[in-house]
Length: 88
Image 1 (cartoon, rainbow, N blue to C red):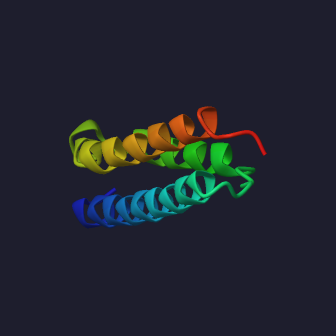
Image 2 (cartoon, one colour):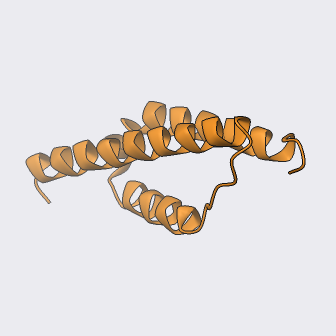
């Protein structure tokens, strides 16, 4: 794989990470507002994302550490909101 191909893959994965982070943030806001949400498919999406990131060469994948950390923070906040939400 060429360096250009790897750069393009990283850019695509970063876009997916940011889109997923935004989706999780919206889900958290809905939970905070007392709205029921459906997280079906999130596990699969995260699994696919991780597989894509892990398949990159180590040095190239290292560039994804910060975006993935931000996604993890958002997922953790969603988890907290789900655990501590008021019963319906």
